[in-house]
Image (tube, rainbow, N blue to C red; front, side, top):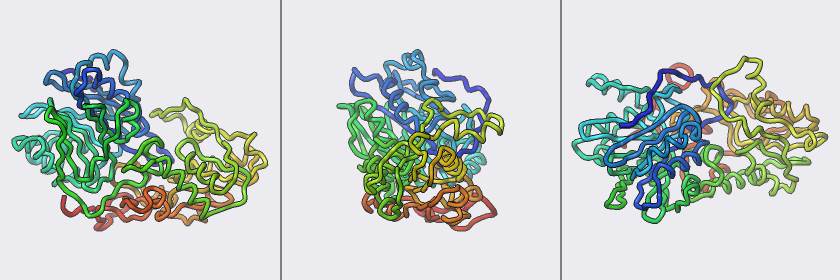
Length: 487
């Protein structure tokens, strides 16, 4: 088996004033000679890079053997041409980009996770978070299981391996009945590609096709990157099995109400993706238009915080009739870094990424649209930056509700104590960030913008109403006892 040697080192992540998606997953089962599975996976992961910038990995099945390579860094940094060419001739491939929410940021926790067990070898990729992983891990360790990583994906792999004699699909079904939380997964055996989505459908997962070749990905933008056609979204609670016998579907568990993370439409997903058949760009644009209807203001220009808020800003401008103009220039080469410079430079991080366009804002009343406010530190610095460049007024409009609670299902949010919306009113937040006015979109309007009220969502970070029941709170911070009834 070819593998990447995993050195023991860790990179420390600085606290950021945003919400970050955990992972992106991809898988391909090729039935066409002109397609290279490794190439397709590389470009698919490249299209999903926004979902995770800490590590990247690819596993392939070739000649009945599973080989893999993974490392810390961006897709283009990890997969040089010689690495990808070494995988040529593979029939099946899966890939992963990671932003850690559980498990430390180190190469040993990178995915795909590849394990050998008595029935062979399997590779797994996982986007999401299991809320009962710690309890299951303790049970398995009591029975003699040994864990090599700190990620909950290894808990899933262990459970699948323990029921191996029942066959891979039955093993996955039994695993789904035991784990609680969110998961969108690709799983690869030597001759099968399998996609799995949790019963609530909290994390997205879609199915595509290039002629007779099937593709699975977190977002449809990955299909566009390889000229694949979108077929459908994998259903909540569904297992999709792809092999030489074609595609088979199994519904392990179906909830009365689904709970797709609404933040996919706000920030996480690429604007050119479609989730549950809805354009992400269209949803953001409509959210901006609703903001203009609900919270008009006299102003000279409308602008968006680059890049995710631009569609909402355009929607606000069109609905309000106020001219859209760029107020902020973005450094296109900033990238993400895990090196924390001295405090002096950390405090100037926003200036490194963004700078005010004095020519466009000087003497102007500016409506600045952003997708969210998490800690508030970035918003404060941006308002200060615009006013220092001569803006007469800065009116903040946020295309989502206040973030008042942490996420437990695969999103890296600040703790309750660090969330500015958890302990301050909108007026208090306005004063803290220095804006002349501040308004948020309501949860009802956000859902209307996303799917015209036809889809059920997880809005826990806005409402504290989670799809998995909160039983009681223990102590401070994020520690909650959660329960999900049934599978």
